[in-house]
Image: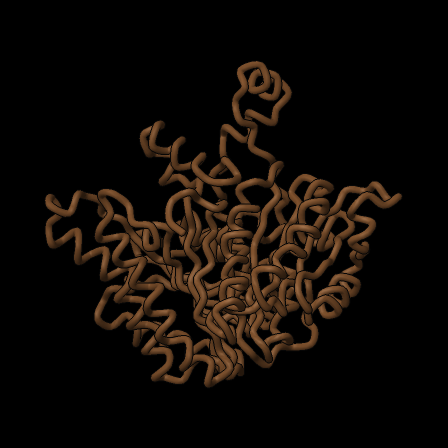
Length: 455
């Protein structure tokens, strides 16, 4: 599946037509492919305030083979090469006056940003500020990065990472994700890190090598893409879906060398059946436990609230929320999760912004975010993480059946002016599943091209 208009607008004939008619021309995004460099060009790193992360950032970039230019070069030096990334270390802000340094660095650097470039701002959480002035300056980063993201052109993105004191070692993984093609459809987002025990190095090509990953709803669409990306990154995937999707499920599992497991996750015995299946796998492989669980399965049963019957409401809650709660609790109780396990739960933009005719769906997906936040401290105690991914408008077979007007509006009302692809959601989930994401816990990452709906 692909966004037809983006494909058309970037064809020879389509380019001519869109220019003549003054129509928008969404960029072809830089998406990840195995073996590609972290960045397709140089990066520049600057500071606002007494930044404490610049040396860390520079070391990560150089270790990845990225040329790091100085801010002076970015502001009109002799080297005219376009920049692939602009990174601002805004840690150490003391008050609004320090924000002038952000403007002074970002404005000239962004002028030299190449298509599908990356702007990344590193700051400290406003909640940890020592004064109102400091809190104001730190919170200003929120408005700054979201606005920059709306101003960028040609498929470029802007995001921010809050790095509290003590979480410096957690930065490398998120830094590589936001700069890479894996984050092509993640735009205008803010992520807060936590201190964690992070591996000093992992395999860039196979970061999930040797891991066992469970993916529910894996027979089609986003779920199938998640399974494929996880397998590409080295995991053995246990693909789960309902018996009615058995043929498609087997096709997905066979295509990636994984295992198919037919299961209705809403059945009373579903959690125990999954636990028993995973125990059998563990015994056969001689492993200690399961490394990754992706709660992707979900359904819609749309109606206006006043016209919605109990069956529609209850079925959506059962699949989208209650099953995630029950299965996660069962896995914890049975002790089949590795100590450093990763749980990733699929929420939705609708769970953040709401959506007309989807009160049941939006409530269930908002509930997923609440569940993740509540469980995060317990997972942190064992060195594990639990996070949510909230997709926006993703081009799938399901969205292809929507009325054309609804579909096109949904695709265009974001900063990148196009619908995302299932692989965009899969890449974010696979990143959250990596050992290097140990410092990301209790977070919700929107994969929506910075949708104009919601925060």
